[in-house]
Length: 68
Picture 1 (cartoon, rainbow, N blue to C red):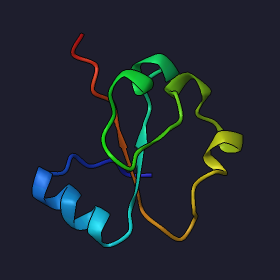
Picture 2 (tube, one colour):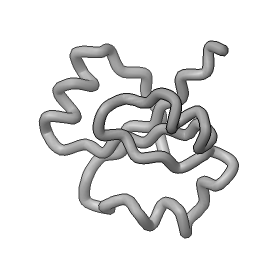
Picture 3 (spheres, rainbow, N blue to C red):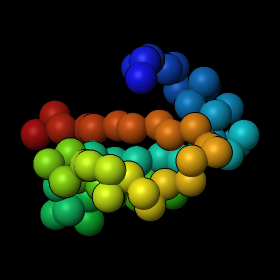
Picture 4 (spheres, one colour):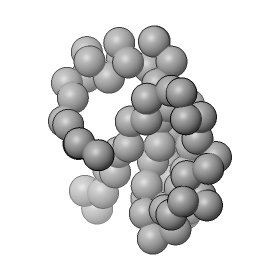
């Protein structure tokens, strides 16, 4: 599956159009700070089972903001 880096404007447009936002940081980092509307699926737990939470007919935007 291809990966792409999007601009802020493109992300806003995709979210407005119904894209799903997934934060892949650990649960404690997600609880501390995440983007509004994001769901948490930690990267170490990302597999077919955890990805089943996502709607297959909607685009998925995945992000990780780990500058700590």
